Image (cartoon, rainbow, N blue to C red; front, top):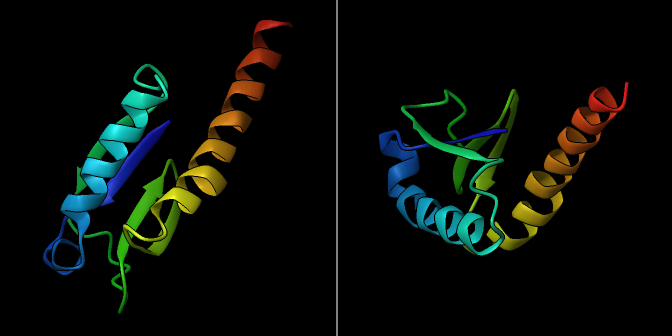
Length: 94
């Protein structure tokens, strides 16, 4: 899974640096280093009045803040990761 955090000027001003730190910490704590590739992305062209734009594979989410990070990680990142794992496991069982 590829997670891209927008680090364009608008998102940077809205806290993308802090979100990068939160992602790095959470990925490490949950031992997901081998499953999640964390990258920066210069402008996702989805600027929002609040928060940062984050792309998970091909899905774009806007308005993510440090305050909403935990819920976002649990509801979007982990759910997508579980789907990816299920898809991979289904392929390996064939």
